[in-house]
Amino acid sequence: MKVYVITHKPYKSKVRKNDIYSDLLVGAETNTTSLVSKDILKDNNGENISNKNKSFCELTGLYWMWKNSTEDIIGLEHYRRYLVKDKKTKELLDKNTIQKDLQSYDIILPQPLIYGGKLSAGKTAARYFGDCHDPLVWTLCRDIIADDYSDYLQDFDWFSYQLQGYCFNMFIANKNIIDEYCKWLFPILFDLESKIDISKYDSYNQRMFGFVSERLLNVWLHHNNLTIKEYPVYMTEEPNLFQKVKNRVGKLLN
Image 1 (cartoon, helix red, strand yellow):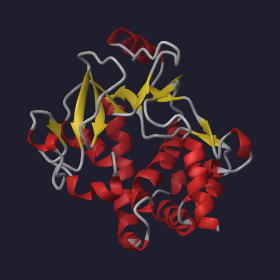
Image 2 (cartoon, one colour):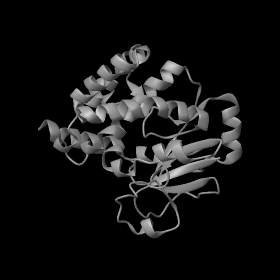
Image 3 (cartoon, rainbow, N blue to C red):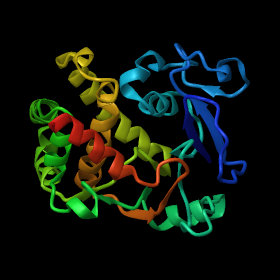
């Protein structure tokens, strides 16, 4: 079992870690941080897409995990976001808890979030994506699924009207489940990459494929009818996540 903590820079964790958690440096192929020379896992070893990190974000870490990890159970968390048993104690999930959960559930995920936050409740997944990002990308993604994964089209359309969803590209599951997800996800993203000019976006939206994949996980989960164990997320640096997004969207609309 290994839970990979995705990072792109040195950090001081406020969460106690244990031996199942390992840092994974992403974007290591072009990253200039001091961690590049340190003896930690890096996403440019083995089969990788490390050089896509600017637009694929933590997904270069997920790709590395898919192609190179040999653990039976794998997870992805972030240097500033962790799955915890409860927000008061901020206690990370331990090996026994994870093993027990995966005896009854297919996958462990963060609790779903309402799109736009409670103050803006009522926005669908498609509307919220369009407000924060490029709505054309949502349409292109649907076209790819319609052409190449038509059995998922009904699930994509279902999710488009949902008012909440699983976010952050975080999970813990048996690796064979994640392998199946990656076999489906990355061809869609690579096709989408060939159809859009990422350079026309600001630095925030150049991380487009990370944002798209957050939504596609929900589509894949629904289609495959996976059973889900949910836990809260402890954010060490951004307690007002949706306020930050609202501020950004406000600037775009003004």
